[in-house]
Length: 89
Image 1: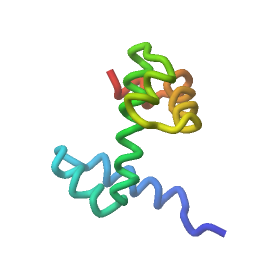
Image 2: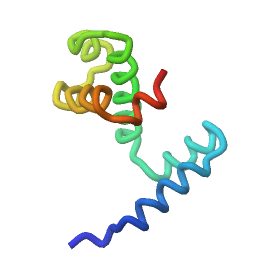
Image 3: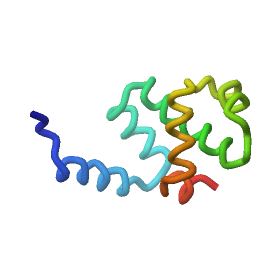
Image 4: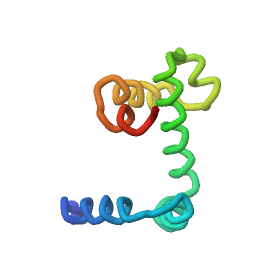
């Protein structure tokens, strides 16, 4: 049974929302995530932006190196989610 609950997750979101600069974000994410996790998130953001510009799966995979399964998830979120649409212009 997981001890992670909604309160803990909400606390994470509150900490992220409290960041005031890119430098603050770098400091937090260096402690919070592995370098590979940050790279993977950056790759997903880049892939979402390319998909929103109309690039094909093959073009996105070539430019980002993203796995096809991950790209399918990003694509689904670009189409049906709300976060990428709101924050990636």
